[in-house]
Image (cartoon, rainbow, N blue to C red):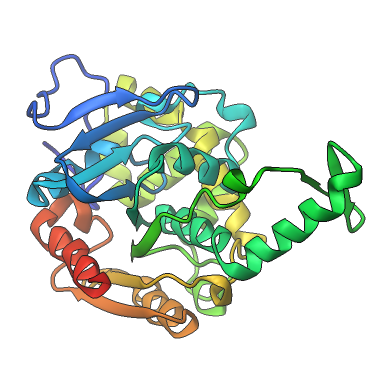
Length: 321
């Protein structure tokens, strides 16, 4: 397999000649959401992998095998891979990503592992279960009892009435591991100059966004040499890419002070300075956190260093126990 300069797969994820994953990793479709999921192992707790921009579930297949027989689940997020045609035009917000994660968690205790933008989704999910967040939701629901549909909070916000089970659906999250999450709302990230995210943000079309992103991650020559069919597959994910990265420059989507679960934060010794600074900065803001450096690792450690990444996940499990 050719992973290019930064580890991104260059062959199409939909190539009929692609080698099949071993049968021990099964695939399924989640009812109602239609998300494509890879499932492996049986032992608890359930470990859910959340991929980043322009990535997919199979990026974690090596890590999933290393963690056997632990129960591991990875899924193609809406707009990507085999979940790319699930009405992305109306469902690509961070809030929608969190709702999709809910369908993957189901009714089991879980540990979340977020790579890059997947870390943003994991932290937003953790914020949803904080006592402060739930208290605000419960208060809003109580206020809305005179209106069967919703209550207005502030000039534009509308909170729909929900039952208790819905408001507590993330209570199963026990801990989070994050690897190199983007933080473009910080000064050190903005001072880093041109980044893949800033290129996406300045793009005029989804195709241009993908071309800019992949050229930066792979190198211009490698992306130029990629087959037209693979390029078109990737460009079809342009709307999801723009939705992932653009809004992060507008505002931070979570409050670190509301996150109560333990968080292990990883970064690579060969990664950019902004990712290394970002790991330590995030750890300084969270209540229960710890950092871990991957010797020789870069942004694609989950693909290139599956054994190290599995040890990273196991370290979180040890901390939780």
